[in-house]
Length: 452
Image 1 (spheres, one colour):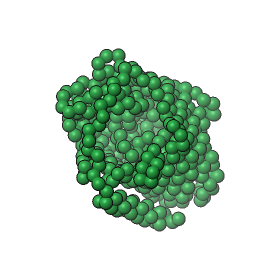
Image 2: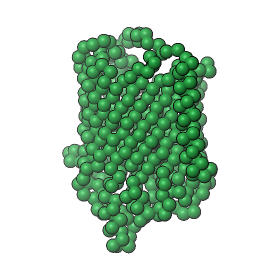
Image 3: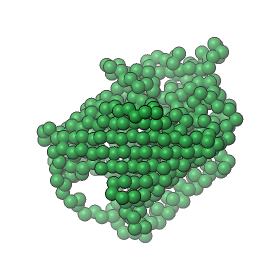
C-alpha cells in the first residue's frame, strides 16, 4: 500500500470507528451508575503472570540498511517473561510490594528498527537463556482525607482496601514511571492489550528508566473528588538508554500530571495532561551533525553531550461510549533538539483507537481493539539520522527521504480457559524509522498470557 494510501486509510478507519461507536452510544442505554460492592480488605497477596509472544514479518522493501535497521526479513521473534508479585500491608494504609521478573528470548530484529517498536513486552536486553531481576520493590502509603467511599479492588501490585474519594497516596522505591502516570484503561498493558510501544504509553513520553523499563524514585498523588494531581522525581540512566541508573540522582526527571475524571451520558471517562522535564547529559542533534561534517565520521550524540534540559507534554483521554465500547487517544510532543534519553525516538505522536468488549457478542472476557498512530521525529533528528547517526532504537545509516512513521494495530484477545488468554495481533508499520525508502512491514503475532 502506498504511504499516502495508508495515511488516508488509517485516518478514515479512525473516523469510521469514532462514528460507529458514537452511534452505538446513542442507541444503547446509560452505563450502570450503581455503587460498587464493598471490598474485603487484604493483608497480603501473591500474584503470578506469564507471557509468551511469538511474532513474524515477511520480507519487505529495503534498498539499504544500517546498524539499527529493521532487518528486511523474513524474521521470527519470541519473547517470554514471568513475574511473581508479592505484597503485604505492614500497617494501616501501607502496601509493600516486590516483583521478581524472568526474561528470555529476542523480539524481532532484536528490538531495533522502528521508533514505534512492535513488541512492548520484550526487554531491550534480549538473551537466549532465562535470567531474573528484581523489577519492582516499593512502598505505597495511602492517607484517607474523607469523602465518599472509593474502595480499591485487588490487582497486580494493589491490595484490596477501603479508600475514600479524597486521599493522598505516596509511593517510593523501584518501579515503572507508567505505573503511576499516563495510565490509560484501553491502551497501557502490552501483556493484555496493544503491543506497540507508541500505544502502551504516549510515544513522546521519554520516561526515566533503565533498559528494562524501571527506575528509582518517588511520587505523590492527591485525589480530590473527580480530580487527581500527580508529581514525581525519578532517576535517569548514567548515559541514555543504559542498564545502569545514576547513584545520586544528579541526572533526574520530574513528571507531573493532572487528571480529570468525567461522566459522559452517565459513562466513565478521563482526561490527562502529562508533562516531564529531563535533566541530564544529552547530545544536541545539530551539534552532532556539525561535528560529523568537520570530521567526516557518522554523527554521534555521545561525542557532544552536555548537561541540559529536555521537556515534553502530552494530552490523553479515555471514554466509554456504549456498553463494552471505549475510545481513547493521545497527542504529544517533546523537545526535538536533543536526543531521546530512555524510551524511544519519538518527538511527536498522535494516536487514536477503539476497544470493544466481547460482551457484545456473548463472550464477556474477550476483547477486540484497533488503533492508528502517527509518530514524528524533529527536523533536527532527521538531519542527524541522515548523517549516519544512531538513536535508541533506530538508525538506517542514512535518511534521504524522511517522513512520519505510521502504524495501525488490531488485536483480538480470546479467553481460552480460566486465567489463560490467547491474543492474535496484527501491526502494519509504514516508514519504519521514519524512512520512506523502507517498508511497509506487516507484523503478525500470537500472545499467550496467564495471570492469576
